Length: 204
Image (cartoon, rainbow, N blue to C red; front, side, top):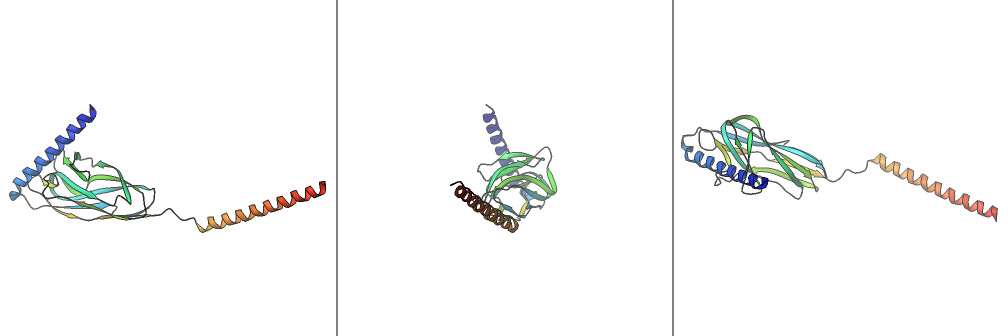
């Protein structure tokens, strides 16, 4: 029952986002020019295999918007997306595709610098590097940033990047210590065998 309610709610939100986009497109000729810059924070970072980390999707929004929708692309052979958490001032919207993310401004339109769109939780799974890229489909009315006064904002994007290194190499001190312990152990075993052989000879 709960799954059905959630599915209906997501469908309603998706249709509402599309409706907002259609209205924004229809009134776009009277809209004030506006820009939105989308970035990732941190914009570049390096991790080890197995590390879990958070990347925030950030927007600088010059004029109030009523909702947004974006696509996210990355190399899934290098990092795995564990989940997302929408920013606190947005109501989450489920897209029609797995790489769609979006939110509706509720209860008021949103503008400002450093606005959190969503937090992305990843795990580093293999050595390599990947870009984190945001984009949108201009033919999809549920994507882009719909302005409160109508129309859509002009978007600029800055990619993020993630590098994944193999597991840490053993430190030189640890390697030397391991060799010394191994040599001492070998000497102890050799001496123990000689002592045992000597005792056997005496008893005979």
